[in-house]
Image (cartoon, rainbow, N blue to C red; front, side):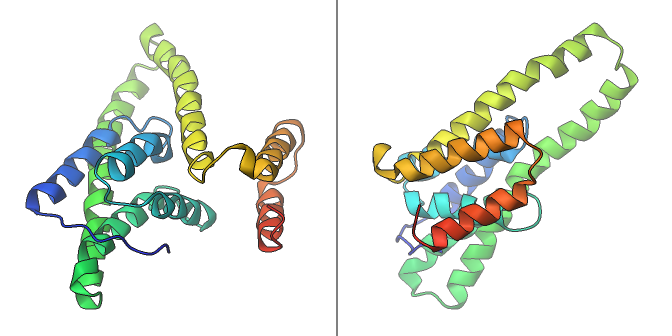
Length: 202
């Protein structure tokens, strides 16, 4: 993981982190990854609790690892905790702060949406033939696509000039075309991208 930055967090800051992720939970239509642009704005640009590199590395690592993609939020919280403990010199305080940061962000992002989803799904299933329910489902599709595109843009532009990484743009375009026009399994594309990165070609 990227090197830490030293920050000081008080009780109010931890509470603000928790409430911010609770509010994002209710906007996470299509998955938590769709709220990554606002997480970046809050954690990196506004609060300076994470570096740009820590943010993108957390997202990339969680996406590459097996398991649900919501794990990137635990990594973001973990890194906030490590940064808060950096002045203590690491060791046990770093682990405690890291686990606390991961727990705060994960509970914050999961609690409201899980509760709402449980209640809304039961209601929508009972009323699935209503025109309003069908319209809501259809209307959510373009919103989810737009949020995913915003997330991709944040991750793609966080490493400097756009034209400086033209090989990555070319690889991204090629992978998108292959996913759209062929039945090639995504793992082959992920593996190829990892190999090209390991060879230093992208």
